[in-house]
Image (cartoon, helix red, strand yellow):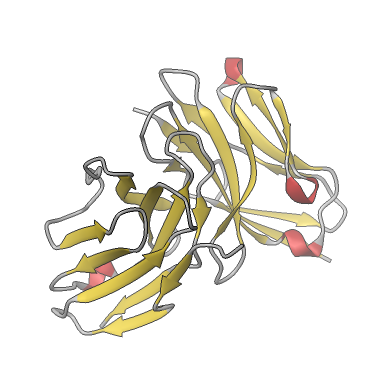
Length: 113
Length: 114
C-alpha cells in the first residue's frame, strides 16, 4: 500500500529564509507525487506534480521539488520565504490507474517577519 | 472558468440528524472525489466516481455515509444519523479523467455536529 510521511507538523522560518518541507513516500511502483497548498478557509491548490518527466519539478509561487528515488523523497523547497507563503502544505501520492490520492498529514508553514 | 463549488459552506447540525452536502465539479471533468479533513489531520479519501463506472466506495467509514452522482455532474454526499466524530471539513475534487490527472478542489463544507 502506498503512504506518505511528512516530517514536521509545523515549520517556522524567517522571511527571506530557505523553506524546506519534507515528504517521504512508500510505493511499490513508480509513483506520481503532488504538493498542494491550503490557505486558511480555502480548498487545496496544486503547487506542483511529478509524473516522471523530470526529477526536478518547478511549481507556482517559486516552489520546486526534487524526486529522489533512492531516498523515496519528494521534498518541497523555496529559496526565499514570503509572508504570503504561510499556509498548510500537503504531499500526496498516487499510483497509476484509478486510485485516489493518498495524502500526508500536512505541514503548517509559519513565516516570521 | 468556474472551479469546483460546494454547498453549503458551513453546516451545523444536531447529533442524529441527516445531512446532505453538494458538489458541483468543473464542467467536463469525468472524475469526482470526496475527502474528509478532520482537525489537524490530512485528507482522508471517502469515495470516487469515474464516468459511468461503479464508484470506489472503499473509503466510506460506515454505512451511514453514502454518495451519488448524476452522470458527470453534481454529486451529493449524505451522512445519516450524524455523530460528533463526523465533524470535519468535507472536500470535493474533480479531474479530467482519473489516475494522475490533477485534482481540482472545492472550498469545502465545514460540518459541525453538536
